[in-house]
Image 1 (tube, rainbow, N blue to C red):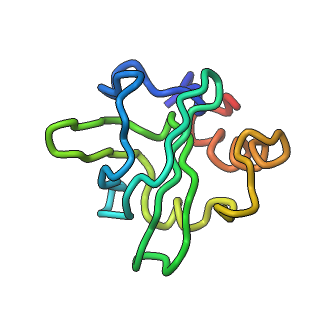
Image 2 (image 1 turned 45 degrees about the vertical axis):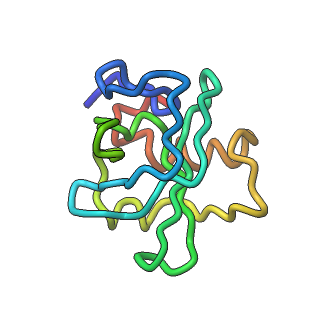
Length: 121
């Protein structure tokens, strides 16, 4: 999987810019992880914030847009190419304290997810 820019939606994902994904169910490769709580479509800094609900009690996770492999508008589902354990092990995200576009925070996610996609951060 080389050449994926993690901070941009893949052209092949089916995501149409301007389409609100908030409330969509998010599916990892091995099952449901939550619902989209926030979405950024800022060029070069696209990501989803997922409310994991009971899966990781009271936790939100940030997923760079490059993790999204498919968006199904009719079913209101977003599919990502990471497992639950990979997502659970990602850098901690505190929805009230962090600004994902902050360079330090963004670098932590790039360091974690970048190697899955050929190191492009």
